[in-house]
Length: 384
Image (cartoon, rainbow, N blue to C red):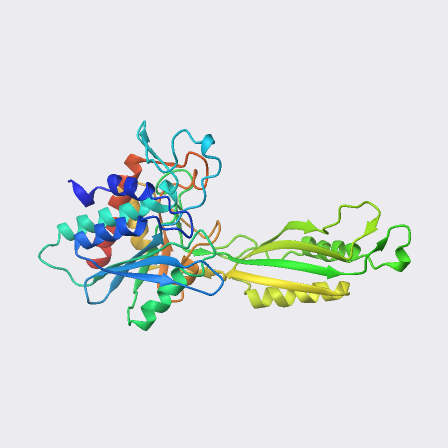
C-alpha cells in the first residue's frame, strides 16, 4: 500500500510544522489536505476568548448518517527547550535506526497520522459503501491553556447539530510497549493559590507586626496530613502536592506582609471539585486569620465504565499485538475530560516514554502497528 494508507510520511510532514501552542504553522493545513483527499468535509474553527491567544482547530467528517465515530487529538506541541541538546533539529523529522525523531512524534502527531492511515485503509476496503460516519476533532490548544481548543469545538458541534456517538483520543497511553494500556478515565485536577496577609515589621519587634508565615505553615500542614481517600475501583488515591511557597522577601530581618503557597490536587471519582473546595475552606478556617483562596479547576474526575468501547479497543489491540491492555485512569489530564460530556470516550496511542523530552521519538514499526489497531477498531465498530 502507498500514500495516505501509510502513516510515516504524514507523520513526518506534521512534525515538520513547528506548531508550539498556540501557533499552527501549517500543521492543520497538512492534515486538512490529507483528509480532503480521502473525501472528508473539513471545517476550520477559530477558538477565541478575550485575553487569550486565538487558536486554529479542525473538525472533519465523512459520511452523513449515524453512528459517528470520532478520532480526537491535538496538533500542537510543547516547546523544544534547548535545541542544542537535540541530536537533530526537533522539527526535521529525521529517521535513524528505525526511529522517527521530532517534537510531537509521540505526543501526538504520530497518532494523528495513524488515524488517517487507518481511515484510508478502512475506506479503501469499503468502496461499495458503509453505514455511518467517521470524524476528526483536532485542536491546536491541548498543550496550552485548553481554552480555545476542544471546548470551543464541542460548542461548535452543538450549534451545528453535529453528534458524536463515540470517541477515541490518540494520546500516548502506553508506558513501555504498544498495547500496554487504555485510558478509560482521568483524575480531576485543581490548582490552588493560597494567600495570607499580615503586617510587615522588624523581626526584633514581632509585637508590632503580624507574621502570616506561621499560619501558612499550619494551613499547609493540614493539607499534608489529610488522607483524601484510599482510592476507588478504577482510581488510585487522590493526592495533594504543594508546588510553591513565596514571600517576596529577600531580607533576613523583615517579617513579610504576605505569604503565598501554590498546590495541586489530583482527585479521583470519590470527589468533585466543589466538595474539595469546601473541604479546603473548612481546613483553612480552623487555622483562621486573613486568607484568600484562588482555585482553578482544570478538569473533573471521570470514568467511562468498562464496556463496549473498552472491549472494542482491547480486542483490536490484542488481535494486532497479542497483548491484553490494562484499563487505567493514571497520568495527567487530557481533552477527553471535555469530550466525556458529549459521548463515551477512551484513549489509546503510542508509547509515551519520550513525550515532552529532548529527542522525542517513536518506533516506525509501532507507528504502522498503531494504524493497524485503529483500522481494526473501525472495522469492529462498523460491523457490530
